[in-house]
Length: 184
Image (cartoon, rainbow, N blue to C red; front, side, top):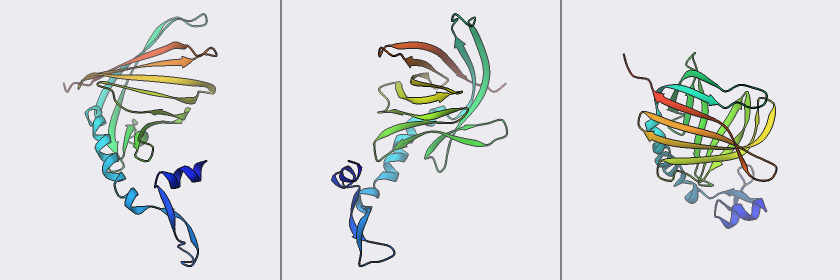
């Protein structure tokens, strides 16, 4: 149960209500919470390498309804919100929250909030790879998606999207190849 878990983990404890100090209610354990901002910032540093502008190629395989194709684009990543989020920067310069580290659960959160919607989670980086999974609605189609990011080096990374099928197996969806834009 949620409340039992919050109290068991030490995230919450009993304390005086803000509106009536004589009433004991569940409050955040500030001693516990005090360590979380530093933990989040330390984890976010693991994505600092990705800041900057990137060229991308989305490799989509042929299916029974479409031919194979490669869609080329550009994009920019930036640590934002006081380095608490990795943001996508659109062509107008607007920053959209994209990836963060949740220090409470000690999980990475990949959020989709425009066109595609959902939250995928990851336990974190293992060497040069991080894997996100979660239920998403991709342009109106609901699916359970796995996205595996691989950092090749400071100037290249890739991610593969796979969809979980009804039998629990994974089906390849597409691959994105991203290379840092070089100053010319």
